[in-house]
Length: 131
Image 1 (tube, one colour):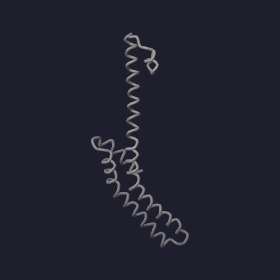
Image 2 (cartoon, one colour):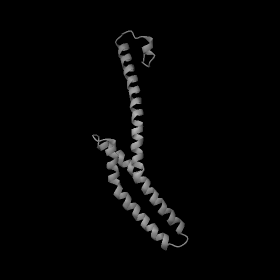
Image 3 (tube, helix red, strand yellow):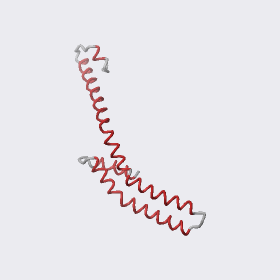
Image 4 (cartoon, helix red, strand yellow):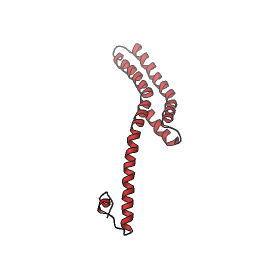
């Protein structure tokens, strides 16, 4: 979630850079904090695993495992996944935006023609223009 939030914040402030650069910058900004935080948790849980007694061993082991997997997925899977998803969806998004803008332009032209009193064929009006 930290990586996703950094990508979102950077995309608002870095308008002139590519999305790949934005993802890379977000990774660089959060990598050291994530590793330090996770390393501290893993260190404490390792001590708890060896010195905590039999009742705490399963909990400490689960926390160690979760810390390692969580750190890996947060740092090395999240940003590439967002980048891949963005690149894959970019083409579909631009196609959808093109369709919507064509529809809006057609509606605006129809409305302008109707307001000016120009005869508008029924086929044009049926595309979505208001009467």
